[in-house]
Image (cartoon, rainbow, N blue to C red):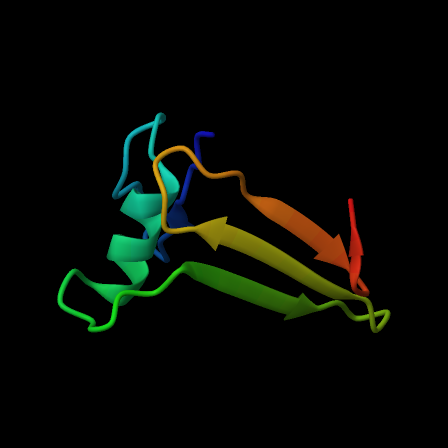
Length: 76
């Protein structure tokens, strides 16, 4: 699994804190830090679209785990 996290900035630059081969562990550490105890098993990002769909992205705190996406509770 590789995950890319970026943030377009208001000045036109792009914040790219991780490399192209980042793992779930890297993303969880970016979001939660490395001193949260007990450590999280995953990070879940939930978005509700304008049409009311609920989209969840599950990122495991693992270098070998698999990320998953659910839309309205159904795995895609």
